[in-house]
Image (cartoon, rainbow, N blue to C red; front, side, top):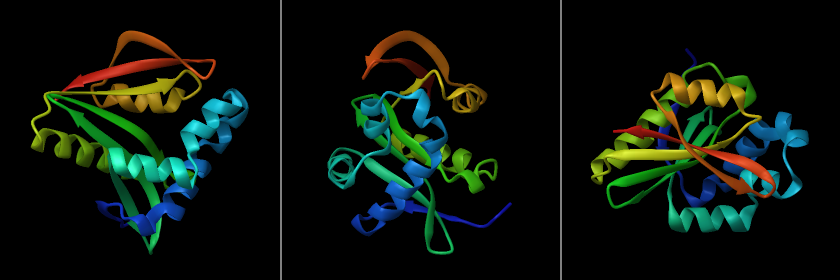
Length: 155
């Protein structure tokens, strides 16, 4: 397995995070509405907003961001957003390590469960989440004209 380190993101990681998000989701651009895609890959301003609201983690290898995830606690419930791994790093354990670190961070602040939302085109991601004990909650909302499915897990 390739070597990488995990840490909390700093403001100086913004370019790497934005590159990671856009690279990871580019293959799905045509399956997303324009608004949903932009909300998923972010821009400098929306990433700055996320930094203010959530804890963002990065996986770094050779001084570049190869993966990212954000999490936030609301009482005993946590929520994940913005998980992405560079295409050439997918399947290397980065996603599992990011997910494990985010879940650990949520447990440390007293969360008993965690949710995430995903879109139908992300079949590989859905399989990944199900492999890591997430289950569809049945809650489906509108995400800029797309169906957004909630997945939940007990911590």
